[in-house]
Length: 238
Image 1 (cartoon, rainbow, N blue to C red):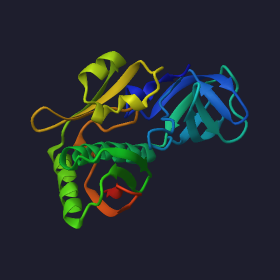
Image 2: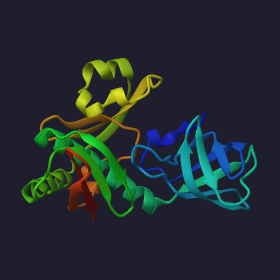
Image 3: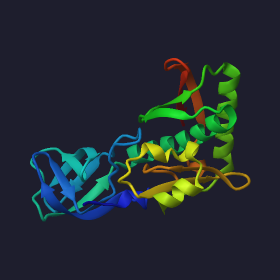
Image 4: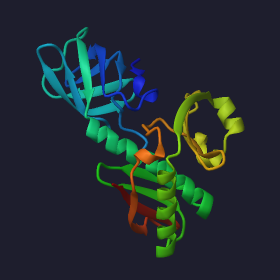
């Protein structure tokens, strides 16, 4: 099983690993900082390289283990490779992902509107929430609150917690632990500081900035209906 190093560090962009399995156009590494697609966050891109050859990583997926899709004939099993993550892409997706946490928390706290789904892209993100309709005043207020958290430069951190403790101690509306398979017994918890205590605490395996100030200014660009009793908000970060 690949050691998922991205769970501990969101800012590492270069690492060494050994190829454990070499398939048609995919490789399995013993360790990786490449983030696999999941939770609305796209996969990292980048390269794998040996002393005499380089492969482009075009996709990363997680199933029984983590698979890195590469161009050309993949490196041989046992090869030691250097992984290099596309830093600009990762930084952008990380900023959007953390901004989505702010948005989800604000919608739940201020509008009793839990998140139903989200998708991040490299130039915008969208979030679906259980709510009848947000008007222009609502959207302006939500945007202002998100930017207030950005300007306050709050701390963001993550740690592992056993599932039983998480289910007994954390707010189920925020963590949504019930959506996770029973086989997952250790949860990664992400916290964002507030003015007094913790502003948001949720279970999440994505990548995040360490300070909300790193997100950059947020602009809500559009809203639309995503179905009966569900609203979709689109936003961009600078």
